[in-house]
Amino acid sequence: MIDENGNDDPDHRSENRPVPPGSLTRYVPGAATNAPKRNVLVVLAYLLTCVLAVGLLQTAL
Image 1 (cartoon, rainbow, N blue to C red):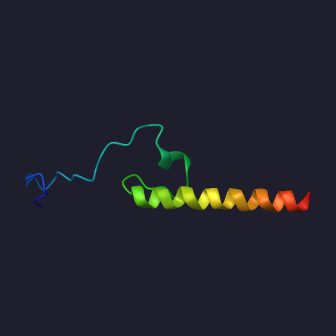
Image 2: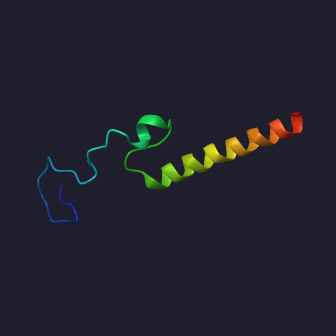
């Protein structure tokens, strides 16, 4: 496999990066290590859920 950096080593994969121990994927279900667009969508989904929960609590009280 030849990547855009010119490395033709078959064992080298540019998408395999070490994950820091305090990464988002460890604490947030649905987040992926090398998928920033997916992580943004996951965070937006959690924020929408929180806003809806707060709205329901305000109407209930």
